[in-house]
Amino acid sequence: MKQTAVEWLGKELESYGDSQFCKIEWEQLDSLIQQAKEMEKQQIRQAYLDGMENDYEFTSEEYYNETFKSK
Image (tube, rainbow, N blue to C red):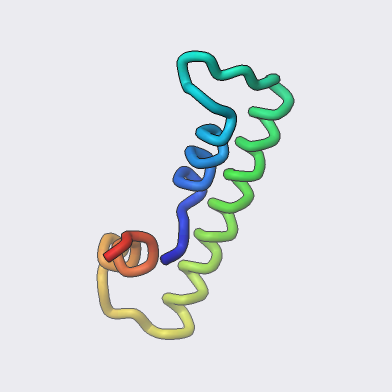
């Protein structure tokens, strides 16, 4: 399954250790946020292309669940 930008960001932030004692510089956090935004932009573009190319006949919720939710 694909990973959403938010899921990716969460895992990246978790890699910095215990959330109660998280020590991360703002520049690092800002960089992660920017990367997540770019990933989200690409995911939106891909969803549009998938819909156009495959003429999907299901709802956006169904598309999301099919593409991003683990089974």
